[in-house]
Length: 293
Image (cartoon, rainbow, N blue to C red):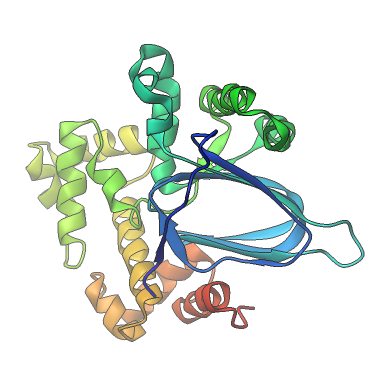
């Protein structure tokens, strides 16, 4: 299913949108938008699909930052016999900061919002701080809300208590825009050729490294082996094709570079925790309101 494109109207007195949702069950269609989204929810039960990642909503406080045009959906309601679920949603564009955005003092925030292309899941002590700050943001007057928004982004960007959500294979534009020319060559080659057999030596030759040196270089730069990265790219693209629902699972496996179907199923389950068919059913459960158990 292709994500719907949403747009937002901004109020004259504010350069970004902020709202609080309380109580009633919330169902959001599978969509994307040009604005960056900050989303914090506490209480309630349900689930989210962010890119190719499923995240349950289980009553605890949870916060994400979603980059521009990252497809997502949230579906949740009240937990039985507990107080109403509450959520705060912010939509903004980096242009909200004007020329201020390009100043050296904003470098950490710029990096954070760039990294949000894959989705950012806030954690630890930072999440506890954000719970207070996000709900306070709702009641701020316009001037104070801008100052608080900057403080929220600055706090997250400097503590770095977060993890990425969508896989690097799913959000391929993130990989293509790396600041390293060698890594850019590697990423570009893989993203253009993941559908066929790729040897480590073939990729090492692209940057003129011996095989062993290439493996050490790639692991040092990414924290994972090259083959692990290749699998992530292939499975990320398989998730896209499962969402589009235009090919059967065997066709998807072959399109993503797998000549052995059982190997595809094994690697898919290892990364996603379920079979391709279950992943697809869960996805449509979120986006169409179907049973996604």
